[in-house]
Length: 51
Image 1: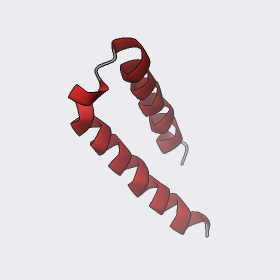
Image 2: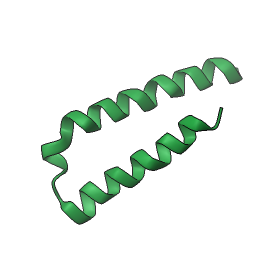
Image 3: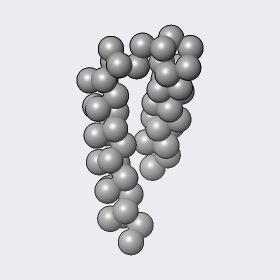
Image 4: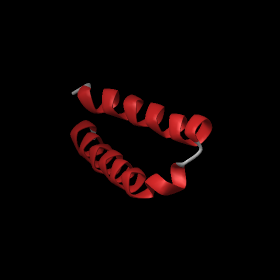
């Protein structure tokens, strides 16, 4: 139940690292889209489980 929250924290760390330190987020847009899709799917699963 808590694993997706951990993945979200790791993804946000990767996102901020690429955005602020490496400054190459545009070269990694495919990975960003996959991560956002993953977060969206887990968000829907949590929504249906909790409500």
